[in-house]
Image (tube, rainbow, N blue to C red; front, side, top):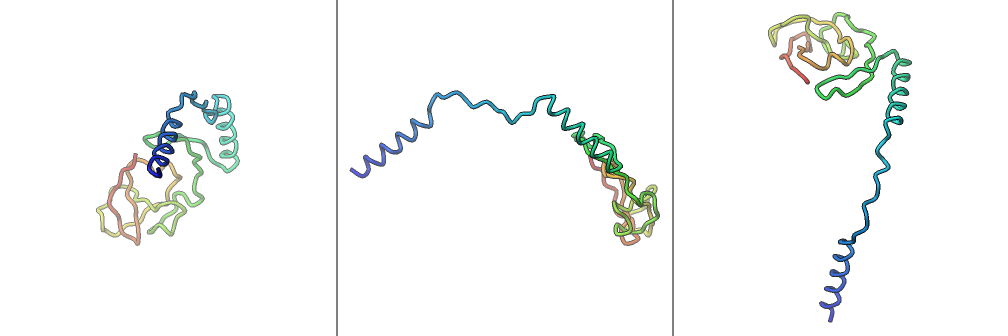
Length: 127
């Protein structure tokens, strides 16, 4: 008797899962007007912070790019900069070197060589 009751419960649950109710409309997808209003608000906020909206990387994701206050300053390690300490030209990895502080987040993409603890690191390329 117990097995039959369990079988009935399972059968009812399976039949309920196969209902033919229409799918619920996706109301979370923003309209083009809402997306444009959001972008304009982000642009205003970004400009107020001293930056510009730019499409970066392979995915072309829009980001607020704000110049670093210490951009272009001479450095020999990451802690000398708000961003990265980057080599100015190709330097042999492991050799003593100095660099300049990263201009802004857009320099995170493409090929670059970091300087850390006064030594050139290997070149890295990021899409």
